[in-house]
Structure formats: C-alpha cells, structure tokens
Length: 270
Length: 68
Image (cartoon, rainbow over the protein chains, first blue to last red):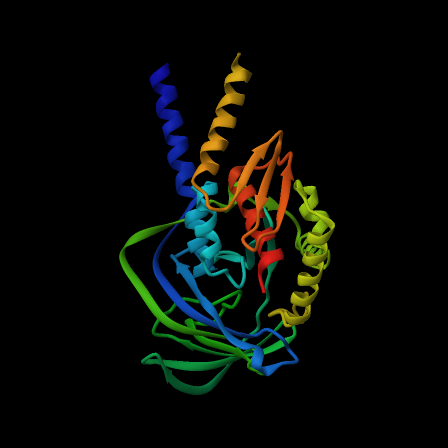
C-alpha cells in the first residue's frame, strides 16, 4: 500500500512539475523601444530585450530582465538582496501567455509582493498589404492593424510560419519580425532567433503564486497602487516614518508624470 | 513542544538568512527592521507572506524611496 502511495505521489509531483514548466524549442528575441513620455520625444529609449518562448501550442513573452530576477528570486534569501538590487529592473513585469487554441491571452503581472493573473481577449483584425521588404535576411510582408488606440505597422515573414509575435500581437501567417505604431512611440524589432533541437524548459510556476482576478479588478488595483501606494504597502506590514511616506508620494507623483504613454491607450478593442 | 521547535527553527533560520547581507535587515518581536540602500529605514511588521514575497516588497520599497 505504501509503495502504491509513493508511486502515486511521485506521479503527481512529475505532473505538477510538467505543468509548471514551459517547454520550448524556439526563442524569438526582440528589442523594445518606447517613448515613455508622450510629450517628450527625447524620452524615446531602448528599454530592454524581451523573449518570446515558443512551442507548438503556447508562447510566453517576457522581459529578459524579469527572467534574470526570477531566477535569483526563486531561491532567494536576505543575503541576496544586494545582488537583486544591482540587477537592471524590468521595464514591465508582465508575462504574456498565449495559447494557439484560444483567443484568450493570460497575463501575469507583478507589483509589490503579489503576482496577479487575468485573462484578456484580443480580437486583432489585420490588413495584409502587397508591400514586401527584407529584414534580418528574411523576406517580410507589411500588415496593418489597430489595437487599443494605436495604429500599427507589422512586418512578418512566412519563412517562419508561426502566427505569433511580441506583446499581445499575433494572427498573421508568419512570425512578426518588426512592429511599430504610426507615431513610432512603440517599437519591437527582432534581434535574434535561438533554435533548439531538443526542448528546453523554462520555469513557469506563476500559476501557483498568482492571484486570479478579472481584468477590470486588475486595472483598478494597479491604478490605486500607482496613485497612492502607501496604503497597499502598509497593508503588507510596512511601517514608514512620515518623512519616508512623503518621499514615496513625491517619487510616485514624478514617476507617474513621466510615464504617461502606455502601449494600450484604450481599455478595449475598437 | 512541536510549536517551540518550529519557533526556534524560524528564529534561527531568519537570523542565519540575515547574517550574510550587507543590507541591514534585523528581526525583532515580529518586526523586521530594514535599512534601505540610500540610508532610510523602516520596519515590516507581522508580514504574513513567504520570504520571497517579503524580499520582493523590500525591493519595491527600496526602489520607491531610493530610485532617481
């Protein structure tokens, strides 16, 4: 009986392990540029590199800096704090999980000590043009779409017949090599492809930690946190002096003023 | 007896975890005293999450106070 129980427990562990890891054979690496302040063209910066981890059924789009942080955080203790503080911060903590069988996209976003998980349904209507070019030594074709307040121009290649791309973009008959909005405030450009003969595994254990919320709940929580983070911080046990609270309020106010140009200008599809 | 053992393990474990850090974080009566990288200080009291969550919150607080 004990043996059966042991085998059963082992099988459950293996299954759980498998669910918590994303197997992939291809990584599409993108450089992300963004104009952070819509009123200041000089605020256009190379934010960082993002990776799109791909297999036949799913993909995960996440910042490389986030992955680096997670790798240390997963087994971290307080002696790792200095190391963690010295790492470059991700421009976004979002992990965007797309399934080929569904229009739903699952987003994991992290702020403060929690990971929030919500579903987003994206209906992207593409207009494929007859304009061709060459990018990254691949023949690419121009397509256009509107997405949540911005007009986008995408260049995709049929040489990689994967209907996916950076961020929430997908739905073209090939991988998106470059995509930017008409104001050139947002720009994802492919900088490399990593192909593997054998599947590699990426720790994807967010489901175990994430709090499942609706998109509107998530938007409300995040908005409240950005506008006034102190009640949230205090609810998690932080006890600040009045002077520290003043500094936090001031820094968040300045940061909110500067970062006024989100990718999604509207909540929903047009 | 079991509870006493668990408490001791927690206190010793916490003390050991803090020992190697240049960032001062000391545990005292349910509160952890944190010194920020730019010199400020604050406490975290009765935190109910995991060590990982506590570290994440410390990083965000540090960024909130110290980042330019």
